[in-house]
Length: 190
Image 1 (cartoon, rainbow, N blue to C red):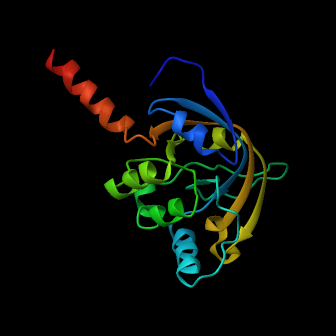
Image 2: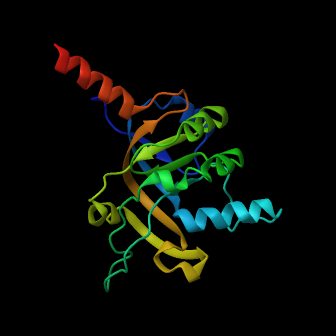
């Protein structure tokens, strides 16, 4: 990661903004972010396969791979930490093709997803696993917009302010996890 100050971004993301990001950059997102996990992703792709519209405008948007816990009285949402991203890998390239500009989760992505990020000019951001209660503080509002039957895994429209994340996979093919492991191996060999 870099020592420079976090980059402030507002959604929907513009392709030029995403192309300027580099693996390791810290970002603070403000605006609308959608939550969706694997079953919701499958349903979104099924809608596309049937030639139907999606329940939200996807162009320039960010999907957070999360299913929040119930909100306590007086809270907007409960804990809202990232889920493991590889479960969305079968569906992500299709959504990127439709204009999805960013994804937030934890863990590595497949080669196919990383190639789609480059092809369509998008970015994969990492959020800190285990910090869901702290991440929830960045959420100003939350409403279910689709697939209510999925409970916590329904698609929600979140309005966030200064949601912290790190660029893991940029639109240029860089992978922060691979770079970190390579740097570690060099340091260990020294």
